[in-house]
Amino acid sequence: MAIKAELERRRKQANRTRAEKRRVQALWWHEERLFARGVQVVAGVDEAGRGPLAGPVVAAAVILPRGLFLRDINDSKQLDPDQREALYAQLQRVALGVGVGICEVAIIDRLNILRATRLAMQQALAALPTRPECVLLDGYRMPRCEYPQEALVDGDCRSISIAAASIVAKVTRDRMMNELDRQYPLWGFAQHKGYSTPEHLACINKHGVCEIHRRSFAPVYESFQPHLPLEG
Image (cartoon, rainbow, N blue to C red; front, top):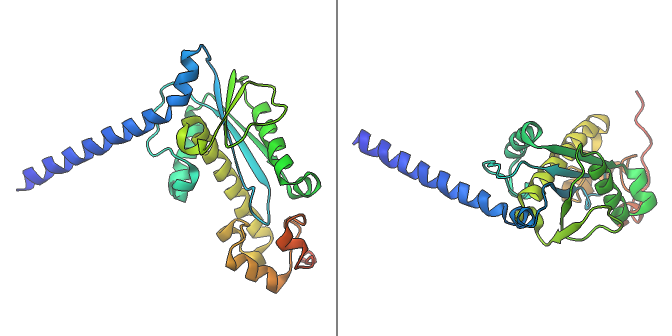
């Protein structure tokens, strides 16, 4: 019975592995379409942090070697923190290029979040060690992009390059918010990462807002007064 159970376990594991390889292979469809047209360097671009009330917006651009298999790679929102961290570490090792762009709160409030996000994406592309021949974007095209580009609705679920960028952007921003939580412990940034959760809103209601809250966002400027910097 033990041998039979072990054989069944191995059979199921092999089936899961084959299914995962098929899933990841399907994520290469848009990149392979570009490769077939002669494009050799494709960068996926995505962002993290457009919606929060606090903290920066972060964009990432990633170039992957053709045909790379990364188990579990997906839209960062579909992964738990441990999976994101593990994939982030793998991407840093195996990607042909990783670029990151960051726009802090002052820039967001001055430009607005849409323009700040586009600026962060431009920074991420500029930080790549290799110029891409085509850029795949999640959602919408980027005005004044110097590279040929294609925008994919739900691209972080459909393109492996965009999924990789979403992971790099998300992990980078989450780490920044964890550090900001140590600087501003009253607001719980490590838990909600600046998003408009009931817990975050309760903290704002109790303590006011701090230097990393986005004054241009309605829940901040309409309802709350700035909090004085903590002493010490």
